[in-house]
Length: 144
Image 1: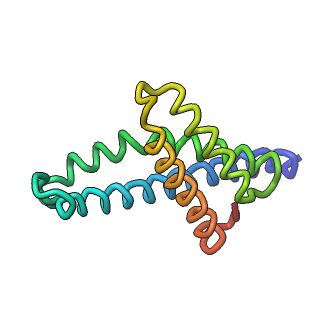
Image 2: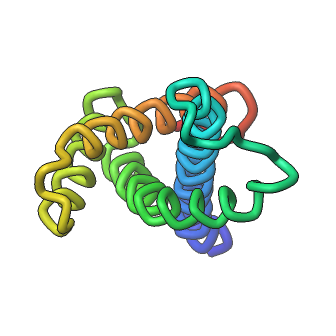
């Protein structure tokens, strides 16, 4: 009886682990891309002031959470669902999930003329999920 009760908990633990790892990996990748973009803007235009950690980190951190938290969580849940159903996740599964999230975000957004923005966000989400998969294979007990 204890073996039967441990199976759903193990599946739920794997689902939670996959969701957290993919969401955090995507959130970290998105924040690093945004940090690089913010730090390099002053080189592109003399009008924009340069990024300073002591002055701009709080606003940057809040904006990073605002921009990347929901897409990272949705991608994490969808990838965890695919991992639960199929057992393993291939790169084309991740590409389909990212395309679905970006298309839904594009359809619900008021920025219908900014398709390149959603393409860039999709690329960051895809890279974040792939880096999360590599990291979970090297460190975790549940490889994605």
